Length: 97
Image (cartoon, rainbow, N blue to C red; front, side):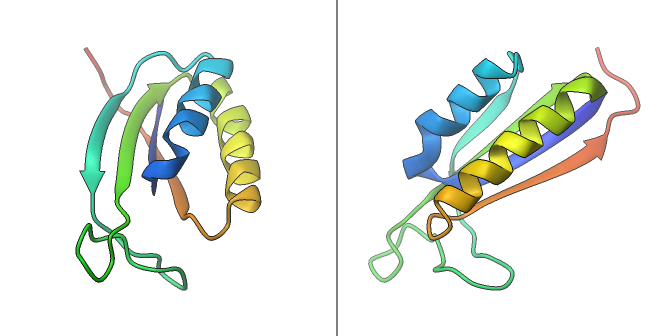
């Protein structure tokens, strides 16, 4: 099993959910409001008067076979919406209930 952590500008909410639905990643946990800024470029997302954008974050644990299709779709979305901000990370899951 693998965990995919996705953090993205809230404007991409529907599109990220659509990717997870299309790739049959049903289960996830979501944080509606997460602050952040890109590691190399892009505007901060702090929800403040100066930086009003906000991120959401999702953690989904999936079978290893689903990781590449999900990450490919997220990469495509990121390419299409470069200025919005999207990051995704994959971790190994050693055990689960």
